[in-house]
Image 1 (cartoon, rainbow, N blue to C red):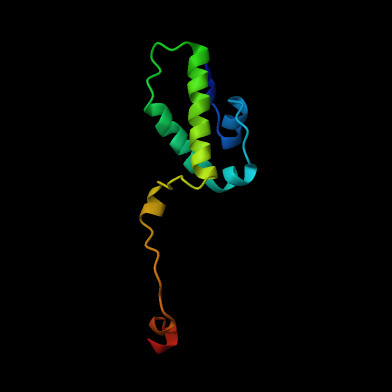
Image 2 (image 1 turned 90 degrees about the horizontal axis):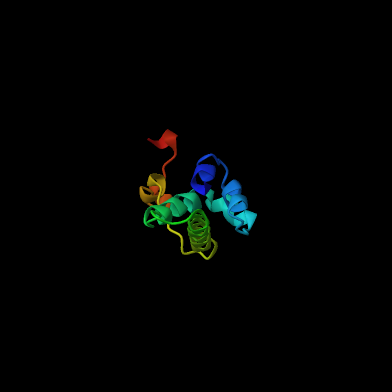
Length: 102
């Protein structure tokens, strides 16, 4: 079964190759974990019960395409905790003191 095969894969590129989804390596290099996490989310929201094997594979392929396109087109949201906790901001030079001045 395709789900069993996918469960054995470890690299993002393997998912694309197994499901025969074309991809730009530069997109995958930057967003591989986010793409795979989004892929998993899409699959979890889909009811696969009662589908035939070829239908499950088609659903998996469509889910990977959706996840990939989200990040390839800049729509993807980085959902890992480290990105959620980041507080980007501006620190002026006058706020930075050399250690010796403290």
